Length: 295
Ligand code: 0GY
View 1 (cartoon, protein in one colour):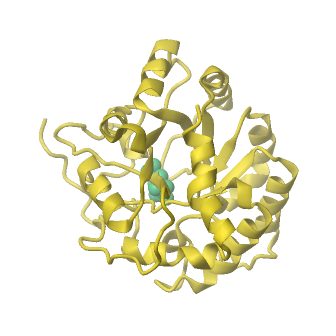
View 2 (view 1 turned 180 degrees about the vertical axis):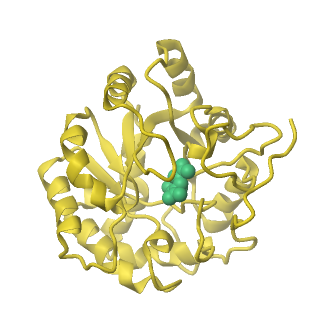
View 3 (view 1 turned 45 degrees about the horizontal axis):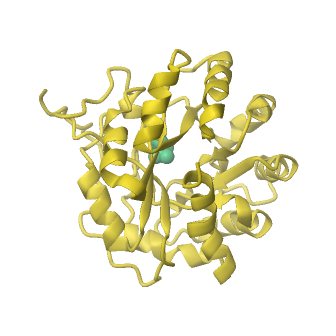
């Protein structure tokens, strides 16, 4: 297979991120990152909405060590569709230091799930972001959710803040722990008291199985790399739900258009998200270990 050419406006991950000034606690988990290809070995899916650069497991594991993380949770990216082989390969090579989140169809078999479990997969991702995927019928997601229960897996969901109202009745039907990507993508120009964000806080308050990733200031910002305007959103969530939050780099940062973050600087931002030693430890160690390393 030949290398698939990345989109002409694709931003490649930072070539030499800084060593963070913030020293991560021992056993810290990067709970949201991806691998892309490499496409000669793991081709991108025909139904993909973007063609990224290659971003291999070797690059990912080198970044893990460079930043001071111990473990990765590798989330299947939409450019690979439901072909989980690059992610599963990374999990197998990562061994106990890696876990995976897969994208599967309702026709997935028990045997296929068991094989992925053996490799380190511990969840599925349901994506509702229209620019990334074609819509999946809700019944298909429910069927998948039921099939994964015996493996003790959890579910990751990705949606935009404006879609929460419509999705809420469906999300409440999902069994087990449901982790919302990137804070449910609030529009950070609206303020923490805007109904879109207070709806998200209410949603977490009323449903104790809902967790979230306090990730991606680089995606949520409208103002550039200090990410000041995003800080209150993270703090509002971590202060209320410190036992239900995860953090990750989002390396290699798919579909960034404004700029490419320095991953070391993203790590330096963590103490602005979690402000006590206890919050930091829960965010980076206790919570991800409980969710992904106990089944
Ligand atoms: C992210 C965000 C994005 C992409 C994907 O699977 C993906 O393609 O997750 C995005 O474009 O917002 O979480 O990496």
